[in-house]
Length: 325
Image (tube, rainbow, N blue to C red; front, side):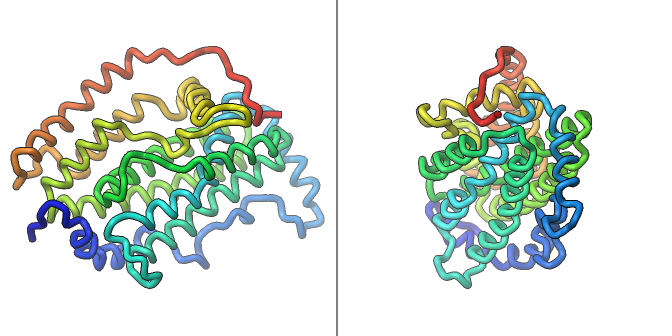
């Protein structure tokens, strides 16, 4: 089946049946999946206060940078209303609440919603965070909007989500590892289950794009090229604190992440390599001339980006975040 330029809506409708069949593989039944209360102190338990004391004691040894990264990750997760509204505006997503893609978006949102709930409660109980300052940054991030350069193009948007879910998987998984080394087993488990969710979601979006490559390879390749030329920006790239301009805090957050090795420029390149392999970019055929040029650009990009990544120097001076008590 061939689709001409501008027929994204038909492509999304074409793969909708496949998506609905695969939903049960990528999203878990609500009654079986973990909930934040599975990990947090139980307020109905007579040992509730002892559990909080243990949580706070274990959180004491988390490094400044690790707390900063955890807060930034939490704010990113809590800006979920922005991501849901953005996906619902993608071309080809029917505004009918019973439509297949809207069903996917609702169920994906429901799973993602647990992440911010869990991390927010942990940080509140930890005694390490100025919650009001964090909450202000969260409100700013939602109110300031969301511009990732994809427009309403479903190809660009799902390429973005494929990349971004892989990135969040790495970030949460690395935080889990660092928390464990610091002696906070509870936080390690929390971030581990969140990372597992992100991995499943990444697999889903990668699968959807694989189907797009099957039916509309040239346009899919051009969309991939576009996203990589314009770079994948993180969802929280508008992150700021009170009194600062849009995006001013984001650089400090990413510096902390790079110092810890939670998410680095090398990880960015590794994700790109994974997508090139999973989508079989090098062996993709039936491309028009523009698609072939786009494929060549993408295949050669990792080596170029790695040379840039090797030259990056991460600031050693710690920024003082208003979020940390």
